[in-house]
Image 1 (cartoon, one colour):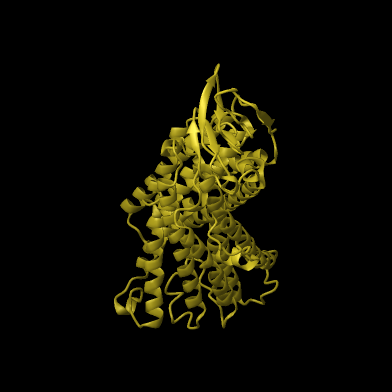
Image 2: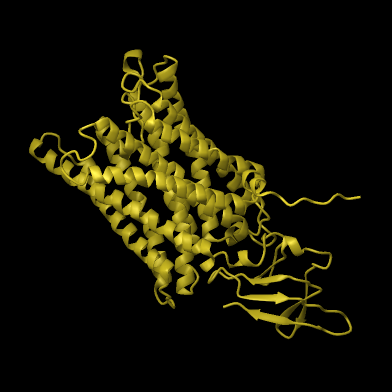
Length: 507
């Protein structure tokens, strides 16, 4: 006898789940918790800066730096990355490629559960002893054992290790899923732009995160095992840390922005009722941005004394990134141009993102040449140039941060079901799908039976499915990316062409 199957308990479902949708929801919930932690620190920072004098810290600059460090690590590694890549990537990528789930479901689970201990370590690094007042870059010698002797910096480094493990496992999972788990008929060139964005992001993570791990591990050894990788007195070089960190740090900028590019592409296409203009060009632009992101890291390091040739190269290479970025901007504008615009809330946010991103990029192009043309002999000009550049830097930082918040808000509307995931309401999995004449056909796992076979016969110019029970028919179109029609209970045999046909229009 077969024993009675017990229903999965609530705790078992959420602790040990291997469903990509459940894990995506876990990522989203964790990201919201981390956002509240980071926002609490940000509010304290802003209140302290609300007046010229010290408002709350009573000139305790270390406490202020500790909050800045905790805020940055929490928002970058524990909020934006888990939500954009973990939540929306996990939830949407298998659906958009027609996969049953992620390639490595259990790996997906452990990649999430590395993050809550990382959040605990970040909070502990803020609260224990004097805290980690190093900034999110954790530069030595400020982060060395001489300047920060307590365990706080070690806890911050351990948090970075945990987030790195989580992101690496997730990146491997995404790459294998996108390459191997696509349904029949969905080739790489046909996958939606959001899937391509996650694919490029995963490659960037896979190539850059090991370098960050090496940098902070060497720092950990300097602090605890008396090595001298970054100690000048022991023959080390703290500039080595900066090179290693920014080789990760600049691709990190694009790791945070490329998923947003994919989301914006879907929003603009959907609410303009047009296919995205120059889709192949958009793919090459995203790939070029990712590649060039690895070649420009030292533009974060002009102050360390790079020679003029290095500064000229890194400035020029950085300005070249404006070319694929401009391609994306003009492709979005060309998609909007002549389209049947529907100015719903997601589209308004997308338009705001386009404006802010364009202005931020233009300011960056304006500021970069200043870095290489400073004449050190004209002492009277130095303060003016530095002041001007700092103003530009603050404007760029503000614009890019607001832009990321904008596409996160858009993503919330997407996950509500307004654009990409209408299919979620009809089936628990997008598996067992085939494409025939641009019609995507899938059956729910819960209703899959022996009669769920797909065949077609021609009735005039219309393809009528036969021998199908409880099939969900999805017309796959780059214009809208959601279900527009549904067949239920269609039966056909040789004596009568069809017995029952029910057609439901979903508006």
